[in-house]
Length: 241
Ligand SMILES: C[S@@+](CC[C@H](N)C(=O)[O-])C[C@H]1O[C@@H](n2cnc3c(N)ncnc32)[C@H](O)[C@@H]1O
Image 1: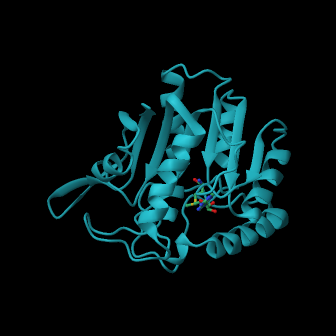
Image 2: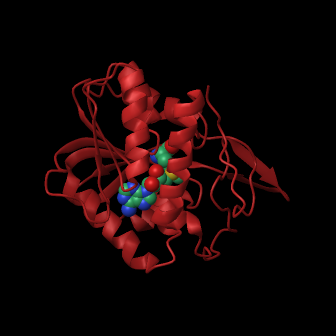
């Protein structure tokens, strides 16, 4: 059983599975810090989800819905990304992206999350799916271990959004994220991000040091007050140095 939308009392607005699930500020508006930017929040959330999984087999939230995984996988397949490519899912949550990637034949998969409960949930789900070769470890991506390196593809679905909501020094956190990314990737490798908190233009600025835009994945568009926009942005970057 799967649920596709995370409901949380701190959300300022929700529009459905493909829309902003964290917090939707107006463009240029500064985000208010949120509990979704804290480890305590995710530890509590995944402890509950782990218990639910053990009780009734519900894997929990699929952030941005299933299509958000499919569009990334479609792009990877269209680019003939090798099934042996080393793929890292940053902030894997319940690990469902790893499951989908494995189902599509990708075999060199690593998932990390700083929440121990999320990692435990992922381990349970991978076991149930019979996926023995997926690596999964507890890691804070803002302070990655030295063994985390050499990835051909890094995927982020909602994790950079969560980090951007940190009540701590968010500017520093964003810079550390970009530095970590450059450490775990190599020139020519791809970074695929799905975000609802940042526009394409903002992401281009944030990831400018060391990354160039390769492709914008099509996401649903909305119209409001005569303005057309995307509620979710999905971009593919290539590391250039
Ligand atoms: C919005 S959820 C998305 C989960 C998953 N990517 C998905 O699409 O379902 C954000 C995830 O990022 C993780 N996270 C937040 N900050 C992190 C950090 N500094 N290092 C590793 N994981 C982090 C949280 O524990 C949570 O699992």
